[in-house]
Image (cartoon, rainbow, N blue to C red):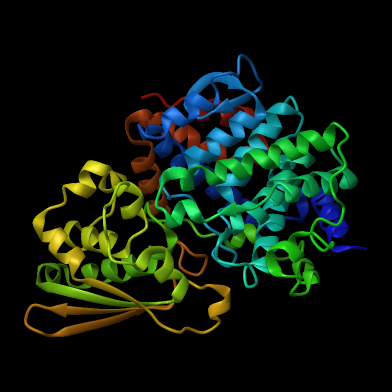
Length: 460
């Protein structure tokens, strides 16, 4: 049986009872985190006009958008909620594949759930979600070592995985799910050029992938036949993005036993994931020696090549200071070191341009260098080495081999709650935050509808 057929069969048949407790718990955590960062995006005045413009022609629909009682088309809801979730660069990441899974999958599957009339119960929604994560992350991980750095894995694996899960929720069986995946593959691919140019077009890309996913599922339900060999065919994803290299059967290894949702990392800091190892080193040092912050005169970081490309270049605010700061080790580290925290407001354009002279001086004295690392072709974000130079000439060296929020170094429950509280800000009362958390975790038992009521509740 071809890889594509086996993937589709898996998506169609995975049962809730087959999902381990760790993955069930991860589902609730990822969903809650995604809604939290989506509310953070909803709060951003630069982000809301995107939603307003995209939904302007939707006179009626079935699907919900964060912070609104209005219903819009499933495609619009998937796009807008994906944009909200990805806008602050605070959404989770599957580090082995670099797929921003949750910001694509949850918006698409929630829209598909409502498009179906809410036919799926809570356990079915969880099973479809877990299968979508497996599809997205396994395809992304397979392609990543061979894919040119100009493409985002979120646009390939993310879109196809979202289509698969959405198709299941729309009632399609394996053949229809395979068609949905084929349609999504044909429309996949997100260029990194917006990131290279540091414009906020980068922040809409998860929404674009979510929209492709739910649209593909709807088209498959309407009878459109997607390419069945969307992965391994002559013009499939493997040929287009990996030059035909690799063995696609790797995607199937451990399928149904090792769940990708258990490998997803929650982000503690609202900026590019590639900057997180450097921030981890700063906060680790501040916990052990809080007073040393004022003594640091300069820092040199040694990072993998991909990290340098994304976040390591000398900082310049330029025409898009928010984006420049979100993707800068020198900026984020200087703010963290002098303020003791990195918060969403630190990336407001006025805040970026108006940093204190002390922070500005430190930014100019943070150097990031690319060095060879093991398995560089897989584009790892660790190890990261930091050499802190003090005013008296002394040096402190630290190395990060893991990243905070990763499965082997998870955030604590208290840290996750604090992140949620900061993300939603004043848009929800404490009781509403508690309700959001409770309904997210209880979806297997109570279903999705009550949770969606909480999603629509935030108000500015």
